[in-house]
Image 1 (cartoon, rainbow, N blue to C red):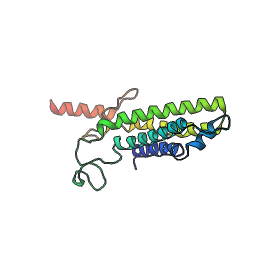
Image 2: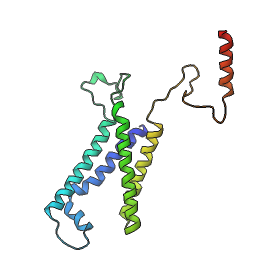
Image 3: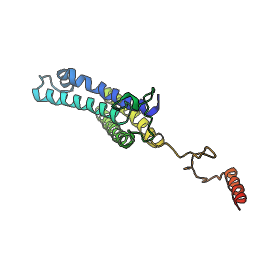
Image 4: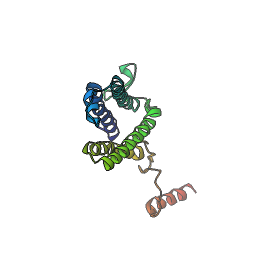
Length: 184
């Protein structure tokens, strides 16, 4: 499995893990967060369940918009591996923006959890910071290194986007000189 797809499924799983207690037992979550012992209000339960459903929706949207699940109308549009056969990948317009938005979310959640941990000192905030931080770092890696297909030279097999700074590629330079001599 590709790192990019691991990131998308990891994001969906992390958000579902956070959403489950908010949807299933909002009274317990509110009682744990409340400084004094009291019953939860219907408004608090509504906001808790709404936040849980929003987290689930965000996780599903990340998986769908990044192309982790092929969204085609027929089976003939895909190969056996689930990868589209068309050169124009249908996920391309949405994969990088969705990755960027989820990366920003995980980074903000990491900062928030860490700041709460430094002021309150409770371990669940540190666990949240570690989980979101791990996903943010993988998301940043995917954004930097896995978001483009690269430009591979047909002749040499090397990536054309690389430069010779600070070390020059003398073999490639000598090959260019040989080709120029043959042409003239």
